[in-house]
Length: 517
Ligand code: FAD
Image (cartoon, rainbow, N blue to C red; front, side, top):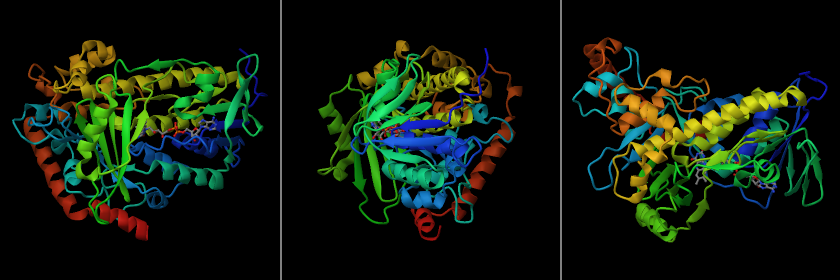
């Protein structure tokens, strides 16, 4: 194959201005934009008439690295997007139904399980102790329980005493990214409704036309039009691969609630509570709560779902306006075809149990910028690599989300019974679960550099949910000795006590950052 360097990609058009669109535009402009030697012109066109999805308030720690890389100040971000710190997710009623005794636990917190003397998991499994897995291997569960923040004011931006991500207001985040992209990274911003997509004989997109009659040409098009998938789906005809046979939740109800008092404490974790046909999320932002019920319409009807959601909200529900959001669960058959790449809901989506949306879209936007084709003639090679990596990411995300359901002991509703049917569990996950009955997970089961969820994530979920691993047949030389493990667990507990004396309350930390930066 001859590589023609004369057909360089000089113009990129991002269509759509939600979180995914602006993250994509910012990553591309930062790496390749006017201020770099690549000199690529990045334009973003978005409609003022088609709203963004407006949800997406939970993130994972990788977002810190992206925001720092893009040059956004953490203080500015906290001030402008009603940000709070997220140190993990607390899961309630996931192990057994409400009413039965069952643990509430963090799976996961963002600190890695301590392994200074080796993986403590095996010894924790052998101990007859009521110490939860998270408290045995990390200090962070205790910090969350006490309502503390992950750092104090002595720590630089984007660094923590323990690891953290954020809760954020999605609409305000898109506005911050817009300003940053336009003013500091040189993204050209067009407000218009795209009406038509024009392609040439090779199938490449040549231009999009707006309702106002403007034609916008580019060499590469990024489809960030949300569930509509206007370019890759509608125009290029790339099939959507439905995954509802694995992950049943296909609707959400969402509501925003004010705080009762100005100084109501804010949890520094997402609360996920299992319900009869899905689960509710509860996120504390600095100015309000964001809540929702994600459910399977095949297992309940919408009226019943709203009743369950309002029951969860209790007295707070009042006459609250509840928004119903249909969700397309699955992903495209391919993510980059010809000169069109999909990033965002147009690429794929699964229920937001582990905040995988922004995580995958941010990671794939960065991958696009990092592997940006030098010319049109090498684009098919870059596209093939991109497609393989994104496919791997979605497959692993689906496995990880399904894990939460299929190891639950809940059988109180058809939704939970069906979730344990073997036919609904991907073979890749079944195989790992079979292995982990006899040995705890190890890094060898997560070989790719592009893993979205790693060993630590699985450890927290498996053992938070009381998954049984029979380690007795194993040769104990593989693990730290019991005295070493007990000693380390004691040290972790002592360190927790020290941190409890040092870390500020979560709301107090947010207030201080807003006031003094
Ligand atoms: P959208 O926000 O839908 O934006 C689409 C854009 O395309 C808009 O700007 C629109 O104007 C534009 N557009 C569409 N058609 C046209 C046209 N013809 N012409 C011009 N412009 C057009 N993710 C997380 O990481 N954490 C979470 O906690 C989380 N919670 C979620 C809860 C729910 C119920 C749902 C459904 C999703 C959640 N997500 C979450 C995913 C999150 O919403 C997405 O990560 C994020 O908002 C990205 O959306 P988007 O930018 O792809 O699409």
